[in-house]
Every structure is written in C-alpha cells, then in structure tokens.
Amino acid sequence: MYSCCFSSGSLIVKLLQYYKWSFVKFLYEDTPKPWHECQVLLRPIAHTFASNQIRSDNRKITNHDIKDNFKSIFIDFISNNASVSLWCVSPRTFRSAILTANKLGFVNGEYVFIYLDTVLTQENTDEKSLAVRQPWFDPNETVSEVNENARRAFETVLFVRQRLYTGERFRRFAADVVEFARDT
Image 1: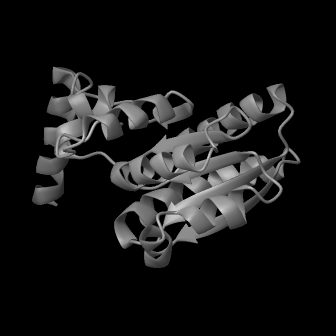
Image 2: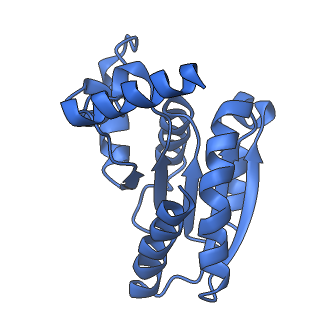
C-alpha cells in the first residue's frame, strides 16, 4: 500500500514540478473512516513532497466548515498563499465544496483542485457505474441547474483514483483471502 502511495506522491510531484507549483494545501475530513484512508494516503505523499522541496499545509474539515458551506476554507485557507489544493474527503463533501468554490469564483483557472478518490463503496466499485463516471451528479437533487453547475465545476478537477479491480481473477483472489482469514 505504501509503495502505491509513494507512487501517487511522485506522480503529483511531477505534475507540480511541471507547472512550477511549490505549495499545496491538503484538506481532509475529521470523520474517522475517510480520515484513516487519507492518513494512510497523505503521509507518504507529504514525505515525497518534502523530499522534493514542495511545501504543504493541511486543514481538517470540521462540522463548522460544512455548516458555513466551506466558505472559510476557500476565503481563509486556500486563497492564502496557495493555488493548489489536494482534497481527501468523501465524494459528497467534495461535491458540496466544489459547488461553493464555483459560487465564490474559485473555479476560474487560478486555483487547482486535486481530488484523491479513496472512498470505495458498493455503488462505485464497478468502473462503469454512474458514481465513477459522473461524480458531480446527485440523483436526489431536485434542481437540474445545480447538477449542471456541479458538472461545469468538476471539469476543473484533477482526479487521482485508485484502480478498481473488478475482473473475475481479482474476485477469486479476494474470496481466497477472505476464506484464508476465516480459517486462521
């Protein structure tokens, strides 16, 4: 797992170096499950950044941030000294945040949003699923204009997504691992 994370860090470092970006803001949720995944993912990425002279700062997204619709994150955190932000949050949280970024004028080419998609759920484990192909779409949204605004805002997002293994060979391997774990 860590070698994969270092590879992700190297990939992101190459991107940052290509565009001559030297400062990144990390954002992560304070709920336990996504944070654990983010912690495992962000530590090696931050280490890779530090060893390549890329500075970073981080912020935990709290209930207050969600209640104020992420405005303080954009106005007080992202707009201060950085144009690149790296998000490790749930898809629903990121959709809300990017809609706010769009409303506040942060989706204008001056700011870069990188989304680390680590949350695998039953509905998005299939590569052909709607959640994977259209992360901006909320089927419960009653106003179609909001989904359209989300779609336009998501056009500015760079996704870093773990590979989704869905083939029969992987399913057999996963079943064998589960069976082995039960036996031991």
